[in-house]
Image 1 (cartoon, helix red, strand yellow):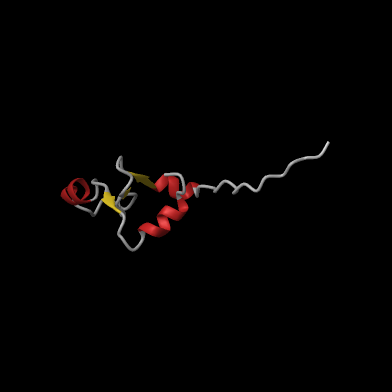
Image 2 (cartoon, rainbow, N blue to C red):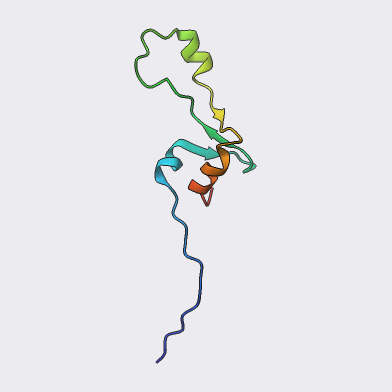
Length: 75
């Protein structure tokens, strides 16, 4: 019996660190990220800043988007 080898493109691996930090919107055109500076050392930051500015999700900038998309090939 001979084994038939077919040239198939290998599967691409997702960068798990990126998968935990970014998600793609429903349309698939935008990538959403969490804002920085809301993990620790929160005592001196005002409640307004934490609630209003840091809580909302932000879009990944146009310059960074191609790199993020490479890390998330199936997103």
